[in-house]
Amino acid sequence: MTMAQDPERATKESARSPWLLEFRSSNGFILATVCVAIFTDAFLYGVVYHFPVAAQLDTFVQLTSSEIQWWNSFIFAVFGGAILIGSPICGWVADRTSERSISFYTGLIVLGAATVLFGLAKASWVLLISRLLQGLSAAITYTVGLALLVDTVGRDNIGQWMGTALSSSSFGLIVSPLLGGVVYAKAGYMSVFAMALALIVFDIVMRLVMIEKKKAAQYKPLDALTPENGFYGTFTHEQTPEQGQVDGSTRSNKPQNGAEEAPLLSNGSNKTPHRQSRMPTILVLLGIPRLLAAIYGIFVNVAILAAFDGVLPLYVKKVFGWNSLEAGLIFLCLAIPALTGPLVGKLSDKVGPRWIAVAGYSLSAPPLILLRLVDHDSMEQKVLLCGLLVCCGFTLILIVSPVAADLSTVVEEKERAEPDAFGPGGAYAQAFALFNCSMAAGTLFGPVVAGALVERFGWGVMTAAMGVFAFSGAIPAFYYTGGKLLSGKKY
Image (cartoon, rainbow, N blue to C red; front, side):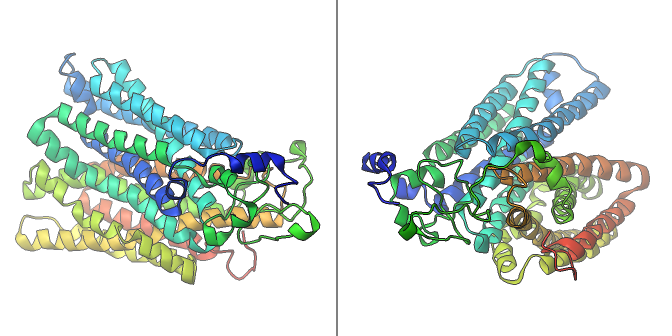
C-alpha cells in the first residue's frame, strides 16, 4: 500500500508528530510506565494492609477492638471483591477499544480519587468507597498494563518483560510494610498519605507521557512498522484501521500485490467472525487447561507472599520482640531476590517456561517447611529466619515470569489454531483479567488462611501447609505449562 493509495494515512503522517514520539513510544519507556503503575498499586495495597485503616476511624468515632477488627476485614473484602468483579469487565472493554491507553488513563482518575478519599476519610462509608475505587484501579492497572506489554514486545522476549513488570508487583508488596511502617512511626498518618500521593503523581505523569505502539504507528510509514523498530502488533486490524495491520512473528509482507497484511494472531482470513456462534471469551479461556495452570500458579505465588505479609510481622514481634521497624526490615530478605525477575524471564524465553516454573514450585517447599524451625529468640534463629526467607524469595520468583509469559503464549496459540475463537478484539486483556482475579484471590486467601492456621494450630503447622501448597503448583505446571506434556498439543 502506497501513500497515494491511502490518502488518510498520508495526511496523518504529514501532520506533526507528537513531542518526543520515539522516546515516549519506545519499548523501554512503555515498560517503565507499566512497572511504575504496577508498583504503585502493589505499594498502596501493602501500605493500607499494614496500616490499621479502621483504627483511623477511631480518631473520629469511638469503636471497640472487635469493631475495629471487623471493619478492617470488611474493608479488605470490599477491595478484593472490586478486583474480582472489575477485572473481567476491564478486560472485555480493553479488548474492544481502539487504544488500551484510554483504559489506562481511566485507572489514573480512579486511583487518584481512591487515595484522596482514603487520606481524608472521617467516616466508614468514605473508607469503603476508597477501597472499592482502589480495587477497581488495581483491576485496570494489571489487566490493561500486562496486555499493553504483550502489544509492545514480541513473543521471543515476553518472558523477560513479564518478569520485570511482575517483579515490580512483588517488590511493591514486600517493601511497603518497611517504608509505610517507618514513615508512620516517624511522622504519623498524614505523612503516609503524602508519600502515597507523591507516588501516584509520578505514576500519573508517566502514564500521560506514554504513547502506545498502535498510536505511534499512525505517524510512521508502513515500511517502518517492523519488529526491528519495536512494532510487533498483537493489536488487530479492526483496532487500528488507520494504518493497516502490523504483524510481528507471522508477518507476511505483500505490498507488491496489494494484499493487506494479516493480523499477528490470524490465519490470514479477512472474514468477519460470526459473534452469535462463539462462546463468551472468558468461558473459552477458562476451558483451556494450560491457561488454568498459569492462573493457579500465580494464585499460589501471590497467596504465599500475602501470607508472609499477614503473619510474619506478628510472629517476629512475638518471638524476637521486634518493633515495627525491625519487623518491616525482615521483608528485605524477600524483596531483594524479587529484583532477579527479569533474569528469570530472560532464561524462560530461552529454555521454555515448564521446567523453570516446576523448579520454582518444588524448590519453594523445603524452605517454607523449614521455617517451622524458627521458634525461639537467639541470634542463630534470626540468621536462620533471614536465610530461609532469602531462599523463599529466590525460589518464588522462579514462578512469576514463566506462568505470566505462558498465559500470553497460550492465547496466541489458541488464536492461531482457531482464528475466530475470540473475535476481532482478541483476548489478551481478558486473559490477564483472569490472571488479575487470581492474584486478588491470592491476596485474600493467603493472609486469612495463614492467620487462621497460626491461631488454631501454631506456626509450625502453618509453614508446613504453605510448603505443601507451594508444591501443589508443580503438578499442573509439569503437565501443562509450555504445552500439554507428551501430547503435542499447544494448549
